[in-house]
Length: 143
Image 1: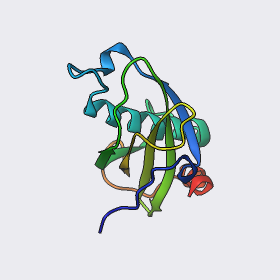
Image 2: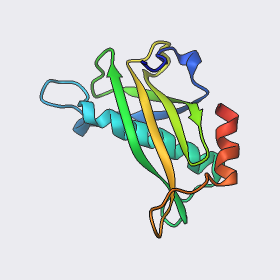
Image 3: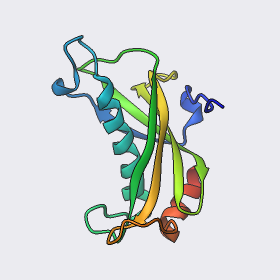
């Protein structure tokens, strides 16, 4: 079953601005496909930092990526200001599936969209653990 297509700005609850960089462009003159995954990582972690007081450097429980995908609709190139939209598609006991859309600043239709799945693990033993309460509460706000 294909995931729901989250392609409109109204499909997302949180937005994080990102400025493209010269190094993001590839030889074809547009943002390289792998860079979109860094945008996905940035918006998900920025949300955790802002709304769950998450400290990725020394948190005892961290989210590790176990799945990601991206559908590219239109090309973006440097220089552009973009916005990464975030929503929660599925929330489990130990994992979360984010829906993420990449938009040119102010535009209503996504240039790319996809999923990003974090499984929360204990940093010491890398074993799955329940999503911490403060993070879960932050997720509830955009579920």
